[in-house]
Amino acid sequence: MYANDGFREIGRAACLRLLARAPIGRVVHTRGALPAVLPVNFVLDEEGAVVLCASVASELVRAVDGTVVAFEADAVDVARRRGWSVVVTGTATVVTDPAAHAHLVRTGPRSWTPARDKVFVRVAPELVAGRELVGGYGSDRSGCLDIGA
Picture (cartoon, rainbow, N blue to C red):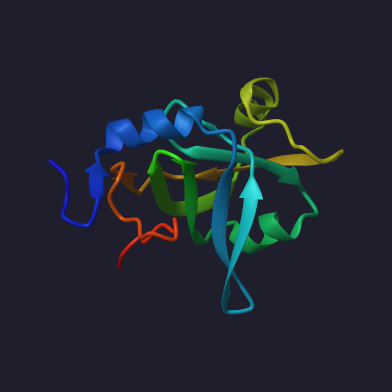
């Protein structure tokens, strides 16, 4: 069933399937009491957690370890006015277990920037929510998407 605003809620399992196909997402955290958003590549682990790779010296790692963050990924076909957005909210932690780290070196995301001392950050999927934009709805004549309130 579609909502009147042109969006349909997506269930948790479908959200995780969509995330698994997305190449890029955005991690939302707090920097100096203000929201900060960074694009990142990622993978989902066996439990549906979002796993990021970064340099041990990165500002992102220092800012998010042990804090609640949001992670968002989406795909939008502007011409067809269709798409989806998924948000995972949960606690971010640096993976410190040597066996888990070694496993992620083999199977986890690859950093797009050179980094000698890589760390992996895991965002637990405490809340998972998604919305699908239904084609033809939520658009005005200018072609701008009206994502509603």
